[in-house]
Image 1 (cartoon, rainbow, N blue to C red):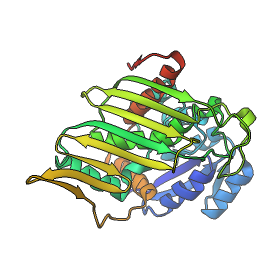
Image 2 (image 1 turned 90 degrees about the vertical axis):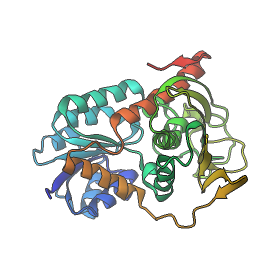
Image 3 (image 1 turned 60 degrees about the vertical axis):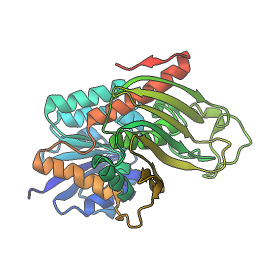
Image 4 (image 1 turned 45 degrees about the vertical axis):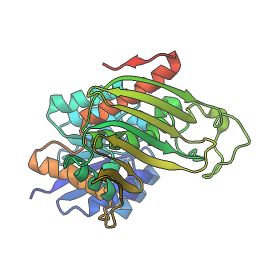
Amino acid sequence: MKTINVGIIGTGGIAVNQHMPALEKQPDVKIVAVCDVNEEAANRAAERFNVSHVFTDYKKLLEMDEIDAVHVCTPNFLHMPPTVEALNAGKHVMVEKPLARNAIEGAQMVEAARKNKKKLMVAQNMRFDGASQTLKRFIDAGELGEIYFARVWALRRRGIPSWGVFIDKEKQGGGPLIDIGVHILDLTLFLMGHPKAVTCSGQAFTKIGNTPGHVGVWGPWDYKNYTVEDYAAGFVRLDNGASIVIESSFAANIGEDKFCAALLGTKGGAETSPLRIFGEEHGTLLDITPVHIPKVNSYEAEVRGFYDAIQNDTEPPVTGEQALNVMKILDGIYKSSETGREVVIE
C-alpha cells in the first residue's frame, strides 16, 4: 500500500485535536508539512506531531511535489482559496465543514476537483459515528420505508463561541446555521439518500448576541461586533417530495441544548440522539432502543474513508457535490430571511 504524504493548512484546534491525531493512526499516511499564518502555532503542531516542514504561506506548502493530499483546517473564509489552489496543484483535499462560506465559493471548489480529477471530501464527521451508521443500516434495509419528512435541531441555549471568528458574518458566512446546523443537516440528507433541495424558506434572528447582559457558558463574547444570527429556522422542499424543517441556535430561551434529527417514514420513524426507532408490528406500536452501538471515533473514521478513496480510486464518502447541496440549502434559508420570500434553488 502506497504511503500518502499529507500537508496540513491551518493548525488550530480542529487540526491538532482531531485531524492530526487521526492521521497519526493511519498506517499508510505521513504528515510531512504544516502551515499556519501564526508561526508559533505551526511550530507547536510540527513539534507535537514530529513534522519536518513548517510554513506560514500555504502556497509554499503546495509547491512540495511529494505532498499527495492536503487537509484544509482554516476558518470558513479561507476554505475556498487554498482548496482550489491545492486541487490545481494536483493534491487531493479534505476540507473542514462547512464546504465554504456560501454555495458560490463551494461550486468553485467542486469544479476544481472535477477539472483536476482529484478527490475533494468535506469533514462531516457525524455521518461516521456508531449511531449514525447503525441507523443507516436500518434505513437501507427498508425498515423505515419511504422517509418523507425530517425535523432537525442543532440548538444551544447559551453557546455563543467567545473565540475565533464565529460571530463575524463576513468571515464565517453565518452563525449557528452554518456552524452547527450544517452537521445535522448533512447527517439528515445522508440518512435520506441525498435528495436535492428544490426550494427553501426561513427566518434568521439576531436578538441576543448583539446585546449586552447575557450569560455566556463559554465566556463573554464581543456583542458589539456580533453580526451573525442567534437562531434560524428553515423549511426545505426536496426533489423526491420529502421535506425538512431545521432549527439552529447559538443562544435561545429554551430548556436545554438539543442536537437531534427525527425522521418520519411510511413504515417507521427514528430519532438520532439517543438513537430510537419507532414502528408497529402485529397490531402493536413498538419503540426499539439499540442496546449495543459500536463505539467509533468519527474523526478517525472519516479520515480513513478519505484515504481509502485515494488508495482505491473511489468516490469519497462525503463528496463535494453532497456538501454543495447542503450549502445551497443554507444560502436559501439566509436569502429567504433577507427577502421574506421562498427561494428556488438551482
